[in-house]
Structure formats: structure tokens, C-alpha cells
Length: 337
Figure 1 (tube, rainbow, N blue to C red):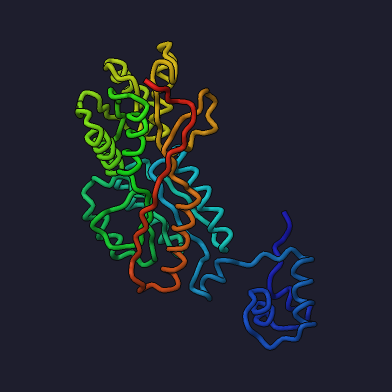
Figure 2: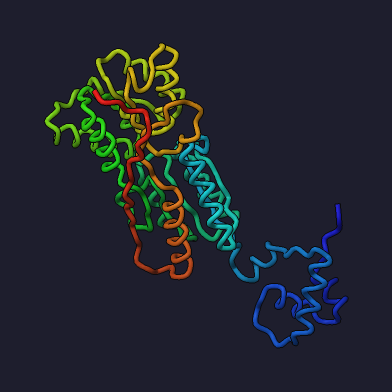
């Protein structure tokens, strides 16, 4: 392993002080000739100089790092969000620490503390469970010494920067599409017991049924967590109904359902029509591709990083909440009834 070159070594070679070298390499204002600037940068490049970010952080009081907490990094939606957000942070000169709470509210608290002790300049937070007693989390966030932005899953009674998609509208759009295709016995696989986003999507499902004059049947609502394995187990309950179509309120839920259907010899859309949510499973190896409600993670990431940069620059600025519009992406998983 090569020995790391220091500012002092570069300074000795060019005949200037380490502070002058530091100012040039950090693009700080200084009275140094263009010739000396060129020489400093030439030596730094030749010696593969890497700045000591820890030392720079102590001087500048910024680490150029941000943190992200997600409930389930194995989720296609959250992994896609993490990837897009990391790329956007890197483009702005920030490194992103990505952490996973496993959907446990107590882990949110631990990870917030961990990221703060690591010296991050700000934190992106997707809460583990919006329905948990949020008093402890709210208290922790209100005393957080760094800016934070809530993404996708938010605490409603907390005044802070937030960006999310309209989950109720997404559930409405998915169900309305199935109704327009002639389906009335529509099952809804949803995590409404533990998730406010699930409850909002279920509310959209109910609104579409009411608008179409179709009676809501609680037997067609199948509760499941957002994991594929949970959805696979819960989907047995769908097969016990007379449903002809299913609104699966996440791509992981849809994948668990499809596994169960195919094992039973059922096919999509000839036996069951399916509309999914997130549109993050477009590359999954099955046909036909899933019709899905899309939450554009590129757009979500763009708003999140812009909110964070604004908050870092203006800590006392008024909080902003952005509610984005989902869209229906039609593929081949729905047939007319």
C-alpha cells in the first residue's frame, strides 16, 4: 500500500507554507500567483494527493456527508430511492451513508444518533412505522442538531421538510383502472395495520369503489406486510375469494402474490388481473409485465436533495411539504372482464 502524501510534503516540494497549499487545493481565496497554483496542483496530481476530509471537517465545520435511513433496503422501491439519492448527493459533492431500520421504530432512534455522531451534515428519513407512538421520535427530531428531510413516509403532526407521493390518489387510480376494465370483485392486498401509506392506499381503493357504485366488501381486503414472503402467505386468502382482480399495494406484495398464483397454476391476466404499486419491478423475469402505479424515485430524490441543500444553507427557512402525483403505467397484467 502506497504511503499517503501530506500537505507538508507538497509544501516542501513547492517551497510554500502548508496553509498556502491547503488554500489552493481547497479552492479557497488566497494571494498566490497562478504559477504557484499550477505547481501545487501539478505536484498534488503527480503524488495522488487525497485531502484529509476529517481534518477539513474540523476546520470548515462541515463533513460533506449526509445520512439516509430506510425501513427495508431489500425493497425495490427503497433500494432504487437509495441509489438515486446517492447519485444526486454525489453530484452535489456529498457522500451518502445508507442505513436500514428493519421497519423497527426503535432503530430509527438509534440510527439518528449514530448518523449524528458520525458528523453528517443532514439526514434523510423514511420512518419505520408512521402508526407507532411518534412522541419519542418527534422529541428526538425536534432536538436534532442537523437538518433533516422526511421522505415517502412522514409524521403528519410534525412541521418539517417533507416530500412524498399522494398515496390515496395512487390507490384510487389503480382501483379505478380495474373497474374501468369491468372488474367489480377486486381484492386489495395492503399493509393497513402497520402503515399509514397502506391506509391511504386502501382509502383510495374504497373511494374508487364508492364512486363506481360498487359495494365495499371487507372480505376482499387482505392484510399483509411489505415483504415478499409475507405477501406469499397472505395471498392464499385471495384465492379463497371470488375476486377476478387484485390491487397489490406494493411491488413486493405483487411478487409474493404472483409466486402463489403461479404455484397454483393460475395465470395473469387470464385468471387474475393485477395492478401493482411503485413500478419498481419492471425488470422482473415474468410475463406479462405488471401494470403499476409509478412513484418516480428520480423526482422524489431531486426534491429531497433540493430541500436538504436549502435547509443547510438557510436553517431557519419555512418548512416545505411537497406532495407529488403518481401515474399509472399500463402493461399487460390486466384483461377486460
